[in-house]
Image 1: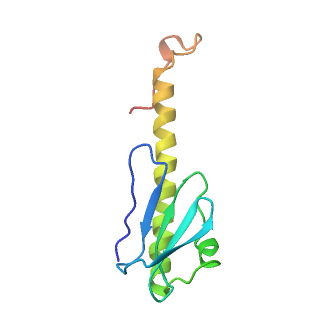
Image 2: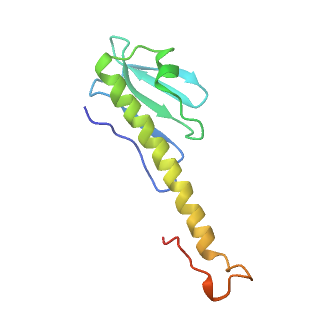
Amino acid sequence: MNTQETKPFDIETAYIKVNNNYAEYSVAINENVIAELDDEDMLVGVKLLSVKEIPSVEEIESHVDINWGDEETLERGLWRVGFCIRLQKAVALAKEINNSPPPNNAGEDFVNIIHV
C-alpha cells in the first residue's frame, strides 16, 4: 500500500492514507489529529492539522483500530512527515546562516560550509 502525504515546501498540515478503503466518517483524536475510518471502523487515513506535534502510532491506535498491515504504512508516513519537518527546518537554518555576514574574526579562513 502506498503512503500519501501532502508535502508543500512549508509544510503545516499533512494527510497520511494507509489504505485504499473509502472513509465513511472521522474521529478527532485530539485538536490536531483527525482519523478517518471505513465502514468496518478501521483506519483509512490520518489528517494532521498541525505538524508541530506528530502523534505516535500507539497514540493513534489507542483511539481507533488499525489493520495489522496498515500499522507499518502509518508508521512510515508519520516518520516521513517528521523527516520533512526536520529537513524544512534545516533548509531554513542554512538559508539564515548563508544570508548572515561572516563573523568579524573569521578573516580569510571563513568558509561557508552550508550550501542551499
